[in-house]
Amino acid sequence: MANVLPVEEADQLALEHQGWAESIARSVARAWNMDWRLDGLDGAAMEALLFCARRFDPSRGIPFRGYARKRIHEASTDAARKSRGWRRGAQNPTSEEQRARELSSELFNVFPELRSGELPLVEEGSDGGEVRGAIRQLLVGASIIAAKQSSIEQPDTLLDYKRLVELMATLEPVHQILMWRVYWEGESMRTVASEWGIDELNVIREHKVLLSYLMKGIQSGKPAPTPKIRPGLRTTSVKIKKDKLLGNFSELVGQHVSGQQSGGAQAAKGRGL
Image (tube, rainbow, N blue to C red; front, side, top):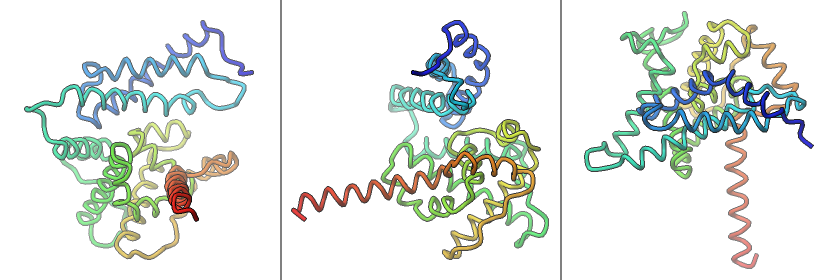
C-alpha cells in the first residue's frame, strides 16, 4: 500500500512547489506562443501539481520534482493544444506558420543570447570559425526542436528525423537526459544545473559539445566516438547509471522498434503466418 502524505501535508507540498509548476507552464506557453494564464496553462499545471502531491509516496525515494515534472508538463502541453484548437479561425496563422513560431520561441529559450542579438558562443579550437560554428549550433538545435514537435503532434513524422534521434540515442544517459530536459521539457540549462548541483557553465559547455557531435554525425552519416563526460557531470552520471536509468532517446527508439515489431507480428498474423 502506498505511503501517501496526509491531505494537509500534500496541500502544503503543492503550495511550496507552486512557483516551480508555474515556471513549467510559462515555459510551455512560450514554446506555443501563448499566454500561460489567458490560455489556461496555469490552471492545468496546478491541477497536475495537486494530483501529484496527493499521490506522492516519499518512501519510494524519488524526489517530488522528478515524480511530478512530467505530469505537469504534459498537462500544460495538453491545455495549450486544446486552447490552440479552440482559437483556430480564419485570422489565425496556418499550421506551418504556427509551427515556425513555436520553433523560433523554443530556440530563444535554448539560446537566450539570441534575444540580445548575439550568436551562441563557440568553444575555442572549433573548426570553421566562430560564426559558422554558431550557425551550426542553431541549425542542430532547430532540428531537435522540430523532431520534438513531430513526436508530440504527429508521431508518424518522427521518421523524418530518424537519423537524428538514433544519434541522440547513442549518447551517454546523462547526456540524453540533459538534451531531453532542455529540448523536450523546455527547461533552461540553469535549472538543470541547479537541480544537479553543478556549475551552469559545465552544462552549457556540455550542450555545445553534444550539438557538435550531432552535427558531425548528421553530415558524415558514420558512427563516431561519443563525447566524453566532463568532470563536472561525472557524479550525476554515476548516480544515473547506479539507478539504472536509460536515456530518454534510447527509450524513444526502443518504443518505436517495439511498435514496428508488434505491427509486423499483427500483419503476419493477419496473413496467417
